Image (cartoon, rainbow, N blue to C red; front, side, top):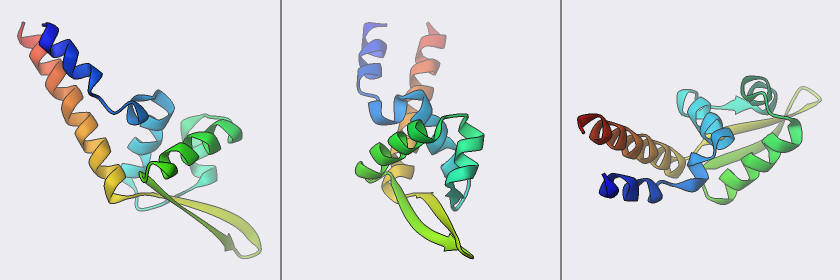
Length: 104
């Protein structure tokens, strides 16, 4: 049991934070999402979403593209390969931990 708990310490804390986990979960399922869609789906405030996106971008997990839709500014967000790998690794570690605990 102690060994199982030690593996929890090794989980990527950047992904583990609930708001960032929701963002990565959404982006893992789509090619790109605009800021307003993420705002609506996550339920975060603009400032909070922006802060979490910045942290994920700094880590190389997201790519943020500023563009225009007509004359309206648009922010498009996509998950990078590194971000997808981090998300998949996180899910696998968490699933493995849950399965080991359920065996006991």
